Image (tube, rainbow, N blue to C red; front, side, top):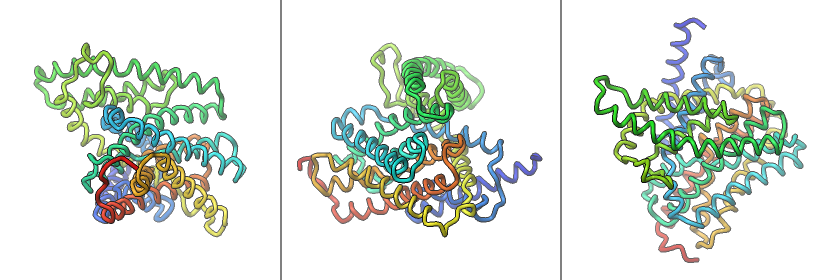
Length: 404
């Protein structure tokens, strides 16, 4: 690809993604829907102007890593501890039920291989904490009991989802489900999560001291991006997906993260806030590229929409995706209206689901038909729940306490 062609392609991606994300936000929908739509419009599904080449996929990979870094930065482990058993129960049920339902539907309902069924089930476990946080914040419900339960569960969902993603990545590379490979990945993931916070905290301490002495601006974003990329490389070397490195780096540097030996590795909350603020422009530049590439990877023209299989598959997976999250909320000892609100808040898949789907198509686990069905499910579960949540909260604006 010539340089001028690549520059024009990058211009088209960033501009179209921004315009459609703005339109989506003004319509009350998550901006990620607009960025996904940009890829669908520019790609083979509509105009066919762009295709996801190696260079774009490399930029998208950086976007995924930085996106998981942001998820780690926003992960509040203390919030999970405050929300307690309600959040843990909701997260485990909302994680396990979609996984089980998705596997059963694919394996026994559609006769898919075990690896494909596991991958689809894993994709359906995702909950987008970013979308959930945004909707609750817009409605002023973050500090309510139901808001704390949902956000605490979404935190645990993120952690479980990243670990599951590491397992599925290994299974897809090995070509099948293997208990030995799974145990190896879990061992590496555990070791990585123990070592990564220590390294990150020590390095952030060095950067903190250097910041007051440097004469050149841009020290924090330069070092932090280098640290995230190093962690991504290290995760790959240890047998885990690169995404895990970004998540671990963000989690370790979060101002809300704590360690048992936190006294020895003191954290300056203001410095963590500066890291988050100065990394935001870089993250916001690269992550739209990932979502556009997801849309570019989807060829809706290649799907035979006249076949009943595509509709049967999409409706089945959509039903499983919604039922798994809503039924997970039904286990909580809460008033019925709060259970429905909490269950609906856990439905959005958003960027997390798209990461699962994109890895599935790139590793060859998912075919075009299944990939298209999952994108449809992810789009609908991302687009509709925010509007339902707003309607439910406005209709029943207050909840007094957690008692049934």
